[in-house]
Amino acid sequence: MFIAGNFLSALATVLNMGLWVYMWIIIARALISWVNPDPWNPIVQFLHRATEPVLAPIRRILPTWRMGIDFSPFVAILAIYFVQGFVVSSLRDLVWRLR
Image (cartoon, rainbow, N blue to C red):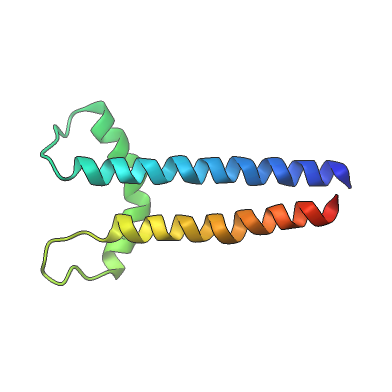
């Protein structure tokens, strides 16, 4: 069972790091949106392509209340914290029980 435990431990670690990196990509996109970035800049294009599949559905569901404030990065970061707290912690607890 130690092999399955090690595999799940590695999976939990990689998932946690991937979610952490994606959270910082969302934060970078939100910070860049405060200025008028060059849309042809490769970094701006990468941030847009990497975050738009997650932020666009949240924007469709979440009303903006005519204020022009985009709360979708905040909601996405909360969802990432939830996944880190629930899925990653559950995987780590399962690893602890397997060992």
